Amino acid sequence: MDLERQMELARAALQNSGADAWEIAAVHSESVSIGVRGSEVDKFQESTSSGLALRVIANQRPGFAYVIGGDPAGIERAAQEALASAAASDPEPGFSLAAPVDDPPQVEVFDPELAAEPVEAKVAKAKQLAATALAADPRVVHVQPAEYGSAVSTVRLWSSEGLDFTHRGTNVSAGALAMAAGDDEQEMGWDSRSARFVAEIDCAALGAEAGRRAAAFLGARPVPDGRYDVILDREVAVQFLGLLAASLQGDSLLKGRSLLAGKEGQEVISPLLSIIDDGLYPRGLGSGSLDDEGTPMAKKVLVERGVLAGFIYDRLWGARAGRESTGNGMRGSLKGPPGVGFSNLYLEPGGKSQGELEADMGSGLVICEIMGGHTADPVSGEFSFGASGFLVENGQRARPVKSIAIAGQVLDIFSTVTAVGSDLEFSGRQGSPSLLLNGLSVSGA
Image (tube, rainbow, N blue to C red; front, side, top):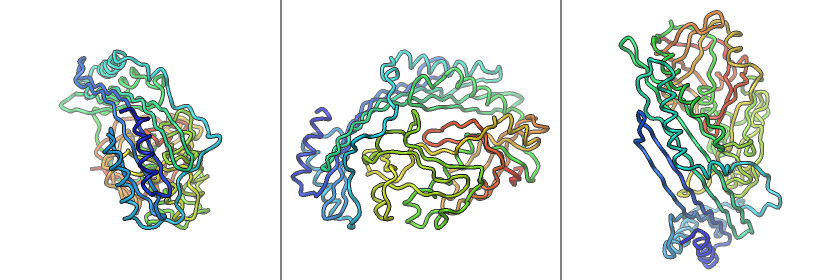
């Protein structure tokens, strides 16, 4: 049964269910993922999926259910389950479903070239990833995985409030993991990128960078314990941003799990830093005209020059806080209702390249990788990570460094920033430039 017919059946079931308000989210996606080992394809996955997520409000109580690839009986059952879910929920007097938007903002998120890209071209790009990684340095001995994948999705939101909106999007990702060997040691190097548009993915450059990174760490060793000026590479800085991000969510604030509770209008990090969540970021992976609840997306400055300006909310948590949704109702999958989530969260870039930051630092460390990020505590902001990177002397990289550890608290990290790079890049839906920090405690392992 096609998705339109499924939605019609769901609408009829919900209208007859006794719900005061209802919403249907229909999703259809087609994806391809290809992996290469050596010069041969060793992974090929092609899939198509579709389903419906149903939300209702009955007696001020929200309910939810979903159905994948629904048949008529399954759709009818899902509507009944949504009502049963509402009956078991607590009342949410301020919660409502989104109304229609007369003139939704426009954002470019669909690439017809990617949607039409043949499988043969995808295979060639996966092989190119592996080949350029292997050719990047004679010490690169193995590349696996080298993967290329793409997806095309369509989402339609339809509600009793009159909302009827369709969103089409594309995304593409590529990455390679290379191994370099020399003098009885081995090192790994990884590079990857995701984007909405196929023209933004340079597989040859990605593969070559993975190979160079692996070879560059051969001969790495620790540095003595001490306090060092440190540059966080943008791929590391974005992980610290992710640690702070939970404290910028309205649900965390109301649950008493935000480091930033009670600090609106106060300086909380370096005045050199601004944190933005932009649902209209050009070609952003989290961009869209409306969020997953049908609320218009927008650009929000959450921290402006170090001062906390606000938090993000979806419709439910916004109602609980007595605030409007900020257009941050995000759906992880059809199997759960929307929740508070970021669109495109990033640290605003500065004006210096990473090379200029290293020259300004003079002596110190560039941290290119951290290990154990999942062990950090988002409630306290405390962390202890293994790390690797490069020792910098006289403004130049002197040698690779590994088996060191850094520990501290995330607000302290962002408060000691003395310069911000111009090299903003996103990792998924979060992005950061490189950051220069003053006096970070480092332990040699």
